[in-house]
Image (cartoon, rainbow, N blue to C red):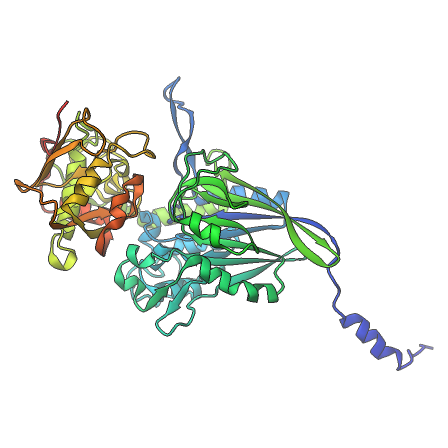
Length: 560
């Protein structure tokens, strides 16, 4: 015969079952992996920060192959196997300015790859707005209803599932002052609540086409994050990590921890953040650094998935209260020769197969077997001239910016056109020359500022030497390296007339230069900015319909 439990015991038993249990005291290590500025780079690329022996040329070295979603998948899997308490986060610009295998498919392969990697959260980057807010919202929700890329949406998979991870940004508001994205996301790791709070650079409107940011307001990064910290604390956060799509640069190597020479906008942001933020994972400047600002880690992992930011947080709970008692930081090389994921390798192969017909499409015929990026004694190259001319042609019309001069950084010219001699040029050849997916920017500079820009070619401390900008047809100057800094450039002319130092000129550069890249800081002073299309599209359009031949390279003259 079953014995019945006295009724009085039942409520007591239920109360005991439903009473919350306080997490046990102890120490937990949480690993956070951060991916910044991936830009849809599904395939490995060359990481110039690490040289390895060249198997084809004994005694010489080549840049290490790094990144790609297969290698990322293999590395993330290894880290999670070693520590199950691992979170993968994005630090902006996962998509946008992407290679063909992603961009021609509306960047959907990249979003799906991030899902397969198990990403939890991604802070908004400026390039995520390249195609406007509605397209980014489609990335989050999924579906095929794309107003910006209707012909590309759902060409990879149908229906497109959207992102499993959450886009966040504490400092982006609509015209009515309402926040457009969640400010943060709380991720449960073991018995801990790890809060990731995000912000995109306040200057996003200056680096994105007006249509991409229409109706949006961008507030100060530090102020916006600090404003939501009380709410995050009320929600029970045990640790707070800031994901900020803004950065800086440092001279120290990617694998040198604790650097103190960080410069750039992120330094001020870091100095003004509330002490409740344990570390900053950053992006945007495509630099690799692992620095300390005000006692806190500030880290960035280059770009294109070549490095993963890694934070190992030691979180100690005592008497029910958790606090971060240690932060260990590193940039981890995503070695494409060491790590792999068959599943993600297959995804990359599928995307490539779908886009190869476009990559192999013949764009033009040139009047020589090859247009070289090799520079002459003055620092001018035939290909540099062609690219500058193409960018001027793309932005000369008043409605496209009304440019009269174009400048191109030589470091952005990555291959001869084509790499293997042939008079036939494919779209893939053009992408090999300009693989970074930079957008064109037209801005206003005075004649005096243009002279300063040219002088900065020779006093650029971060570039390791002179960087001769390639210039468009009609613009010419000479320089004398025996003269003092700031007095080396002379005889500047535009269409045969001396440049007027007091007059204003509309100038085209790519988005890298527009933000002061290679330390051409005067370009950050450019006014009345207008964003344009991709640099690769400008070159493609320029080559079509004309037979381009290498020019005489006589726009820049070195006097000694």
